[in-house]
Image 1 (spheres, helix red, strand yellow):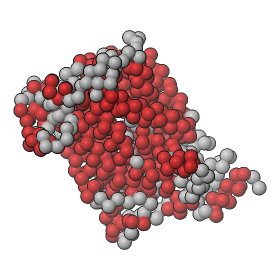
Image 2 (cartoon, helix red, strand yellow; image 1 turned 180 degrees about the vertical axis):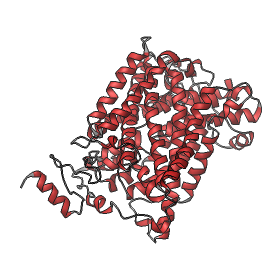
Image 3 (cartoon, one colour; image 1 turned 120 degrees about the horizontal axis):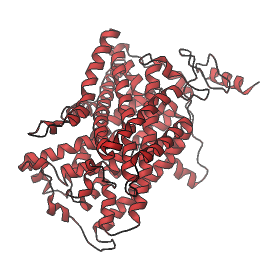
Image 4 (cartoon, rainbow, N blue to C red; image 1 turned 180 degrees about the horizontal axis):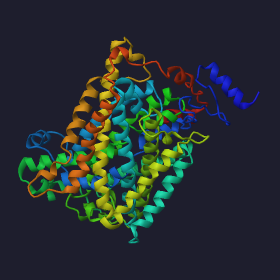
Length: 559
């Protein structure tokens, strides 16, 4: 018996749909005639993708804008009066805490659905099951737009970071980064997983090291032995008065200005849903990855922004990314201020790998989103073409073309282009979170109507459905007021208005158009499909081999 025949027999015994197999043993999708996406992502890949896969320039570079706009504190007098009785916090920190709670609410909603149904297309396909095809169409194209636009944003940011060492034309560095990103993706999901494991490990080590270093520098452990403490909260001050608007209003607006930028930093946590379609043993690995989200939120973002607020004054010239000359992140600015000569270059190199990593994840996610759209007829069928190894090469080629947008930074300044694209992706990402939350609310209603015990699911949260409602409402509010700065007196900026409100305008337009065309009403809770694909998914569940020693036990716990 051939290996291929053996695989067919095994698959048949496990009730997996394998009507035909291409040479090499990979299953073919009967509806498309193309090879299905192959589950190549191991548990350690999924774990690192969820923890550090999309930690990129939003945290390392974008926080410069957040600190400059909001200052260490940016809230109402009422909140300030409360906080005078609490341990010291920061305004940049407050913005990240609020966005962190929204992110966590979205992830527990997504985790419950995707652990139960880890199918290609992730939350895009789930929206079709639990709301209607029109909402799935809208979610899919919004998600694709989000990730295909964030790709040139990361490439532009890489050019900003490399500018720390060189004045060579940014186009050179953009091209190099683009080639690395595209090459990794064309090597397949397994290569992407290995690259992300390596890149994410560097990022995790870097951010932990920066936090420790930041504490040491703040306490006077640097070469200049300057004990900073909370000095910058006194001078230039704890609050940034946004656009010189006096009083509580200016401080509140400064804090609110942080929210959109904070969203850009957090967007991408949901990438684990797209990866679920190519993850091995998804019923075990996806819930474990979702449970680690709080580590990323608390350790990397909240503690990281707290340290930034202590070490760098919001008046620092290096925080102005719009000039295109801010070639270092707030972390690097702090290290330079402390008088450490060699370390800034080392850290900047680590931050550069973060940009490469995030760009690689962006291309992976956008191509899989487009593949998911094509698989259900919401995009041209050419994008469903796959190689014999299950690589959606047609989608990859098309999405790679959008990386060329990063060359806008050659004339306009990479820092300025990064800001434009960050605004567009932050709003589109928040709309994705809004859609995920709405999908979960319907999922919850369907489970309840059909008498399915949620506690028996691979992953569930006791915070539901309140967490989903909280996330949906606040995501919509942040999107609605994301471009409020342009409505201030003498502050109109067409580029800011367009980049903030274009995604918000497209979302209802896409849904209304798709709803008219499809004419499919909202799916009733009693009629929702919780059965399709379950047999195939359960056939791919297996018990992990028990650890043979303490080292393996630790690794299994960690990953």
